[in-house]
Image (cartoon, rainbow, N blue to C red; front, side):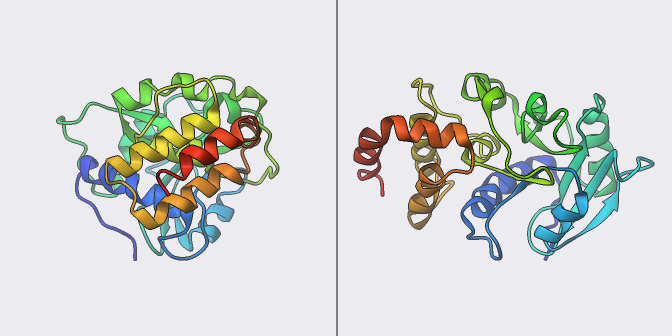
Amino acid sequence: MVTRVQSLQQYMQLNQRETIQRLVGTLGGKAGLPVATNDIRRVASMLHGEIHRVGDYSIRDAAIVMPRLGLPKLFVATERTDYRRIFETAWKNMGISIGRSVAFDVDHALAKTLALGKFEQILLNPINRLPNRSFGSFEKGSTDRVFDNNELEIASITEALKIGEVAPATQGNLAEDCLIGVINARGSGLISKNEIKPMLDTIRNSHNNLVLEAYAQVKPDFEKAAKTIE
């Protein structure tokens, strides 16, 4: 059933965990978290959810997907610049108190610069400012990313680590950065022991061509390090 929350802080904490669970398929159902789409109905179908309006906005401009299991997801039109206002309206619609105790950013799950011209809507997430703003180097160079499906993009491990707020220290290789992110997630208690290998597999077999290419460059060293945490 849809997870009901009362505060923004509660949503952010639960969303970190749920994102990883969706990434590796431990939440139940098919693995994967939609982060961008050209058809919001595809998102609703994947999450087994219902589409709801946000205030007076059209469904194309903003839509809440209420999944059968887990937290509601907010998608906004890629070209909208007033997405924080839309976010606040959506949270009011859902009865979730934002309050003033948390300094947060409203962040596109998939970098907006990547989605423009490719996808009509992007998933929005509230995220603490420090990890969000330290993630720039992690996304640097992502302009060469290739999308295989123009209807729906599923989160790769890079988006999951960002939403989970376990941005790694940059080592200069994306696969190594992702490995550090997995280690950070384990150290923070965000993932369980049995989720480590599935997360590492999202690096080894990533649909994100940049992650896959980076893994190929450092495979021997990566696998040696991976053995110490699997």
